[in-house]
Image 1 (cartoon, rainbow, N blue to C red):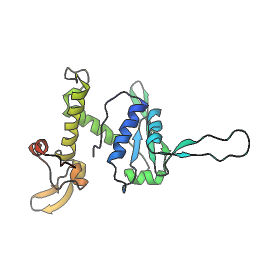
Image 2: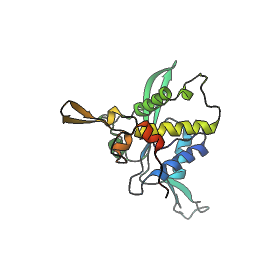
Image 3: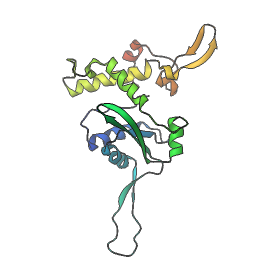
Image 4: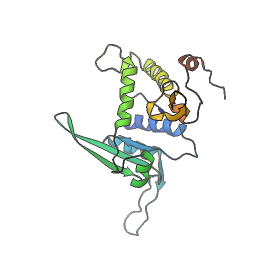
Length: 210
């Protein structure tokens, strides 16, 4: 499910804002999700900022007393996937577990028996975004002219992706006459709704006032 998006610079401050948005959507009873990224140090710093705790190192009685520092929560899980390229060709993929227990991470991500964590899912989402939103096509004339319209366009895509678009990876096999598969959207898989929404239903839905 596409939880959130954030438009901004590739900076630590913007990464912190993104992770804060994700955390605000997480139920207190649900575990912290597994985070994966490329080799960008700002993500690590931002994760500790949002999913960290202040810890006072033990004083050994020599020199100055150590200052408090922010350390990651015990249940924070973060993996970096590094791609080594030679002449624009990927020759090796290296994964590095930054935070968390490897076995728990592999189980939550559904990694294969060799413990391989790939980037195919996020790359598939990136491809879907580029083929669904003309403003994301590289070197095109349909780029966003303002940040506000860029955000609104992606808001609509996010809702369509979660409620309207059936995902092949989420379908369930059934035995019901001529039907072999029960199609589902991410919102159906999460139990948020019980049916595939039409675009009209999405555009005319009124958010309840709380």
